[in-house]
Structures are given as structure tokens and as C-alpha cells.
Image (cartoon, rainbow over all chains, first blue to last red; front, side):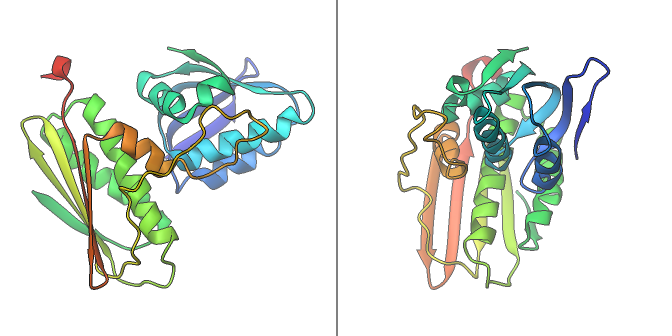
Length: 96
Length: 138
């Protein structure tokens, strides 16, 4: 199961598993962003290439208006995915 | 060896995770092995489903545990030929403007598993991969 919601701090909390069966929920939420935002991955356990595609699509769209998403509290395994994908060069990322 | 057949639908991804997680958790497999195994199973299953939409038969996944490592065999009896071991270069150094969503699944697998084999004959594809524990996990 994957959940995405605003925290009281204004950051976006992601939790669970962002796999190929869960991308619609992520895409619907991130598709509404129109300004720079921070995604908190502390409770995100897993992401596959389907989830990466949603993040990339969002980053490309926001970059058109000079905005960007930043990702914090990324666990080691998800960071490995970002590194092998080259996403560590196109997202600002902070690891746990 | 534990095996199960799964309906060829993206919606099966959650059931596949629970099946493989149960097998690996019961054998106390480390997270550094479990994560790439889950990733590789999902990417390969989604590939089989997405690139052969007319197929009907279930896809069989077998998980074998040995000495802290995991070997997975994915058998599709209704498959189109698609060699998952072939190099599919991804320009991971491209700029944000140049990057296009998609195409990363097999690239990730080829980096994260230790062996990857593909066999295709008479409409049946068999993909086998393995992931061994890192030295510090043993």
C-alpha cells in the first residue's frame, strides 16, 4: 500500500511501497503541484521504475516554471535506486 | 522452493510482493537481498505483462532460498521473445530536459542482481536471476 499526504509542516509525506500498481495515486497527487515542494520519504519503504517515472515527470513539469521537488529522508536502498538511475543528479536528495 | 501462479495484470504486483516477502522473511533473508529481489521480480513481471497484452496465461514465480541468497525463476508460457539480459543503455548522466520517463527497469535489474539468465523456446520464456548476500550480511 502507498500513501501520500501533506504533513502539518507543509511537506509531503510518502509511505509504504510505490510500485507499479500504486502509481495512479502518486500521479494524481503530484500532478496538482505547481510550486517547489519537499517530499519526505522517511516512511517510504520501496520504489520501482514505475514510481521513478512519476517523480521524473513531475520534476520535468515543474522545471518549466523554475520550481523543483526536493526529497528528504531517503533510505539506503531507495538511494541506491536513485544513484543507479542518475536521479541523484536531477533531484536534491537528503538521505536518512 | 516455493512457487505460485499470478494473473497477468499489474494489479497482481501486491500479491507477488506478499508471496515473495513471506518466503524470504520465513528464511530470515537480509533486507539488502530482499529489496533488489522485490525490485527485479516486479520489473520483470511488469515487462511480461506490458509488452504482451494479448497473452492470457498466468505467470509462474518460483523462489528458492539457499545459504542466505535467493534465486527466482519466472516462467511465462504465453510469452513474446524479449531477451532481458541484453544491454539497454540508459544515459543516466543526461540533463533533466533530456531525460524521458521509462526504460529504467531492466537497467536497474542488471545493476542490482548477481546473475540474470533468459531462455526462450516455443512461446515459453524462463527468466532466472539470483541475489547473494553481501559479505557483511553473512
